[in-house]
View 1 (cartoon, rainbow, N blue to C red):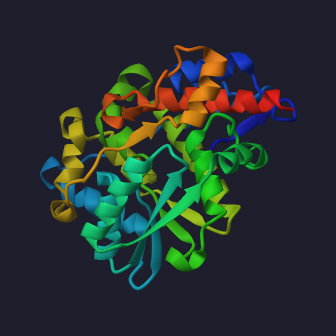
View 2 (tube, rainbow, N blue to C red):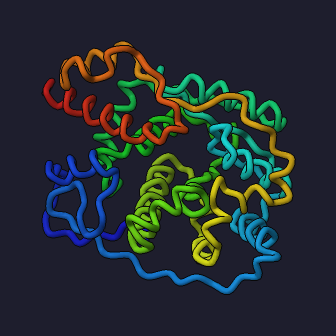
Length: 322
């Protein structure tokens, strides 16, 4: 369930048709991948479990805490955006007695508002906040290094940023275990309903498990490991029995006891297109490609598509230089 592949060839040559399909859709269903000569094994099925909706909030919180384990007095780093998910997990880890460090990645000039919001949120929660700076050149270099340790590295923006950020991480900040909110949107937010309608459970499982496996290998390459409370098997099974109405705006997660103490976020996240990157995009796609530096509001649901186009543009530009 963690990205197992059938190898019919060796290497990391890109399947260009699959790459463009990924750019358009944001995902490739198994058994396709963006790499030639590789096919992905279909994920196993996952059925729901009986739940008492009257006590569902307690059940969810208990699973999240169980997955984080006995962490009283332990150092834990939380991948921290300042959004609801990262604040929820940081608060739960604090409740369980962990010494929590909020770690935010600053990706060149792309996400200044996100970083500022994360700083405000960490301060409100009383967390030590640590920013890891990742520059464009470090980000691009990460793609080549990722090819040796992950299954689908080339168009995975987040994974490349995480890999580059880990290189700058000092284990003294928050230890070698990172807690991540990955999976919350797919299983407990509005994305869950859209994915269920257009992709189905098998595709969602495939996406979640491959993403988790890739992030774990990236962490291991730097002497760390991830804990994904929302992607644990008990949580995935439980999510199948939760009504869609309880997933809108993560209503269920917002009913957790610890969630009531979470402050409102101070600023919106964004995808900033810096001037230097805009010039590359215009060179490749013409004047129609972001004629002015813009911030794409995360709430409009367009940021993923924008980022994929930026990543592909940057990567193709680098390939021309060889």
